[in-house]
Image 1 (cartoon, rainbow, N blue to C red):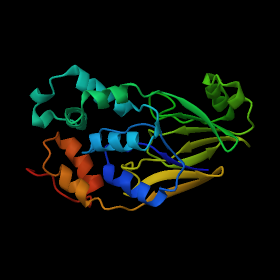
Image 2: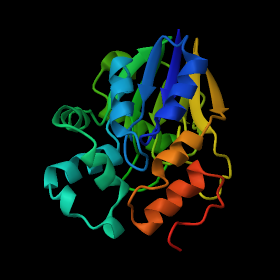
Image 3: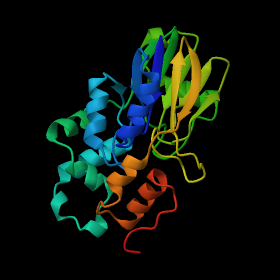
Length: 245
C-alpha cells in the first residue's frame, strides 16, 4: 500500500500535477488542508482533488475563502485592497464553496496496521506537539477503540509548511508533509514538498517543477502589494520588482 500525503496546496495546480506525475502509483491520496488561497488556480485544484478521490480535512484558508465568498461584495473590493482570498472566492462557484465548507476538521484511519489522525493544525497558531503527554492527550479525541488499541500511532498535520517527522515515543510520530506550494521565509527551497508512505515506511520528498506558468498567471493580477510580493517571491525567481514601484 502506497499513500501520497499532501498539504497546503494553496491553489497551485502545477505543483500538484507535477507531484502526481511522479507519484501516480499511489493507492491513496490524503491532504491535510489548505487547498486554496495564495495561488491563482483554486477551481482547478478543487476539481483535481475531487476527481482523484482525495481524503481531505479543512484548513484555515479553506474556511477563510468560503467566508469571503459568503460575505459577498467581492466585486466592490478596491484592487489595492484585494487579497488572494478575494481573488479565489471570485473564481469559485457554490458547489466548490460547499465542498470546502463540508470538509471535516479531523480524519482518522488505519493503514498497514498503523493508526493515524489527520488535522490541518494542532492549535490556533503554529504550535506542535512537544511531548508524549501532549500526544496522548491529543489522541483522546479519537473515538475508535480499534485505532486506540493499536500499538503504533501517527498524527498528520499541515499548516506550518515545514516538512518533518517528529518522534515523540517508540510508537508515536508527528508527520507534516510541508507545503506543495510555499516555503517559509527562512527556507530558500521553492520545490514542492510532500510525503509518501509505503508499507508503513515514511519518505520525505521534494520536487522541482516549472513555476513560470504560475508567475505568468499572477503577474498582472490586481492584488494588494504584500500579496503580490509573496507570490512574486515564491513563483518567480525571487528578485522581480513589483509593477508600479
